Amino acid sequence: AAGRARPAAAPQPEPQEAKPALPERQEVIQPLDLLELELGYGLIPLVDPEQHGELLERIRGIRRQYAQELGLIIPSIHVRDNLQLKPAQYAVLIKGVEVARGEVMLNHLLAMNAGLAQDQLEGIPTREPAFGLPALWITDQDRERAQLLGYTVVDLATVITTHLGEVVRAHAHELLDRQQTQTLLDHLAKVFPKVVEELVPNLLS
Image 1 (cartoon, rainbow, N blue to C red):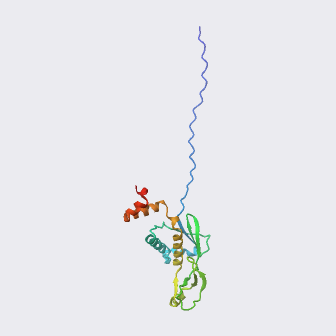
Image 2: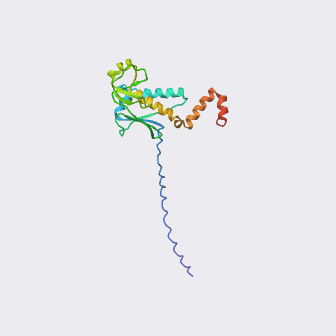
């Protein structure tokens, strides 16, 4: 007897190609600059060496000074322009947050009476931004007379760096991160090993 016909095998679904996994969305987080100095466009010549700008060199001087005085290695200061500031304004930011702002007078010098001035000096009254002391904006042609009268006369780069330096001093604790602390401890451990070992034994073990 003829055998029964086998039922046709059910069609198998064609294997589908595996779809490549979509890459996970990755958000690039830009690290904040620890310390920034923003300048109005009128102050840009102060950082341009071709225009005899001395601001960057003054800032480097502050970093050296504080390293010697406080043992604090100030991080690199990011200097940039900010068109939202007035032309002669500047702002100091720590971790992206503005902590100080000042304004100077372009093409002028700042004259301050430290109590030794022998006579009045004509100028535009103002306040020295770092300490709030009364001062005058004067032109360069009045510099010599102001100095002869006993006034202390400084240029704009000095005004800004003095203010910046006082801001750094006031916020030094915010600029000393874990890496900075470890670097400072490593240095002190070489100079005063016993003292550091007694103060922070766990860090040295």
